Length: 325
Length: 269
Image (cartoon, rainbow over all chains, first blue to last red; front, side, top):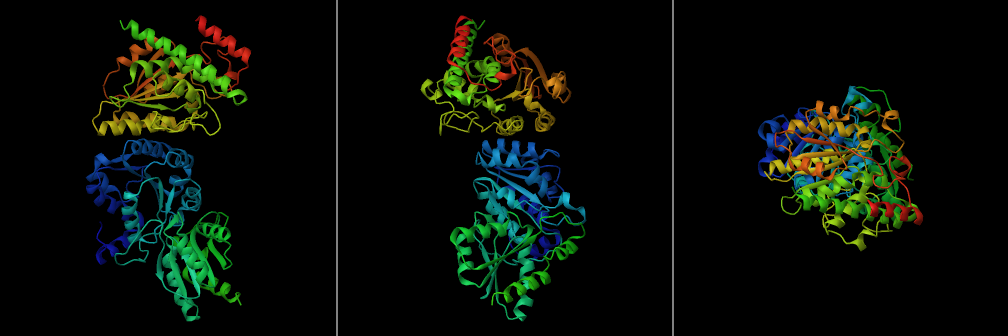
């Protein structure tokens, strides 16, 4: 188990979730000889440089060939290896999507696909490199677990959990260098369980990825306006923690989902499906990215421009809350 | 030399062809991918009845051209892994033998295939695992020429030589047709053997219907660090005159009359 110390949490926040992932996997590999890591020419980008040096027998760079990466990963998994296959989010989730479905989902093989630098974190790189759909797509695949950690600490916890997990999974890593931690000390992380990171009484904010911290910041302003918000970190988007959703829909006046992802098919959609399935009456407000390709800019600018920064979240929730009457 | 074995494999190929026709008849209007199954029958008979040691050495078989599942089912029947009665549940509602194979470890189907162009990469994974585990197992991947249109095949072709996977044996069932017709008008493949060779594979070109040649070739592959590609020249629909080289038998059903004619031809062969 990785040590969740103050020093580590500070270091991880400095280097970003994707580099944290590589750093931690390097340590974990010593205890997991069954682990194989495949990359599509992203070893350095995923912080796997040391892993490659320390564990050359557990590492394979397949080149810029994501379909082949997943096919090879499936073959290794079929032979008993636990495989992590890594690329930038749009390529890990979309270029080889049908391979994820047929070779991982259909055969229920033990491969975790890791989409690094997801959401808008590629900033000025623009839409080709944004991960806008990578909760929606893997969520449609039977057997696939979809995990979206809130910060670097949770990236560590999720990586450890996925090493023990059986079956295919998609790990979505969001955020950039300097994203602030939600979790500064060790906590009980379980796949499929949401974590309540803030208690509240009026509004239940259900967030995933970087939006958990952004939601925490938003609650300061909302608190001043007299609105008490609970925040659920829905780190596993599939399977959904229905117990946590039941509590959210039954105990609050408003449920808000927040995601750095298109509003089509992601966390908000999953919550809406839950609401429809169980006939919940509580109002659901879904906050996320629009169904459009927007102009590119720095990560911070993008979040603000897409109204996903804390101040915009607070304004939106306040506005909706006032309409409840 | 191995006369008995050669005769045995020839007999198996004949049985498989007859069973595949019966399966096609059984499938009725749903039809079956009979053309490409018939072109692969001799290759499969040699693999299953003369070459592979699945239980002992743990040899792997990957049907990359998954639409020809009926040839894999027929081969499994020849080895006794499934019965004739089970074989004749081909394409039955809710059955375990649909047109494209579904992974089934109990009977030795290692891969759910049908999505073309991915079996060679899967084979790399299996072969790499065997290298790491220092086993003697070999991985045989049956490819169709049509699926070599897929870029992912070439991703795998470029990767395997780096890994020195001489335990990976691709077998290209090169029947010179694909769903829409001749490759020349779709994606020309006249240099396909040279294409594989240029990426560092050992390529051996053989007659894919000559049982003895197939057997001798697969029995004498060198462990020289190079992955192998057997480019087998075959005839789509091989063994049934009205199906041979006819693209319409890529996927087709059979009338009782056609079935009887085909069976008569095979019985007289």
